[in-house]
Image 1 (cartoon, rainbow, N blue to C red):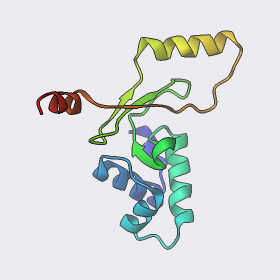
Image 2: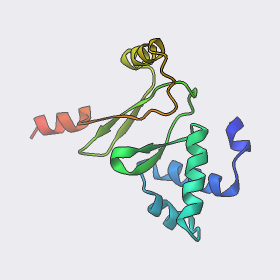
Image 3: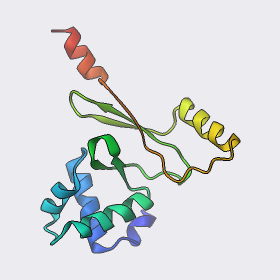
Length: 131
């Protein structure tokens, strides 16, 4: 991955924690796993990873996840299961493209977007029905 070349050792460590965890994780949990001396190192690394499109902060969870690299202008949404914690990253949804087009027609330049949708994944919905 081209953006990996530009990562500092701190940024690589934080990215590794995000990849190994595979679920949302808070900055202080990342701090604990990396062994850094202070949270500032974690937050700086996360900021760069977000800028590169390699990580995303889920505002409602106050946590960070590893995401698939995307175009800077691409809007992304996250479907978050409130029962099992599974997160699905949506980038190709027609509605997201329509939202992007609507914003462009309004001459609105998107700098950052985090769309979070909370609910229940199909596995959790099925298991509730079977009870």
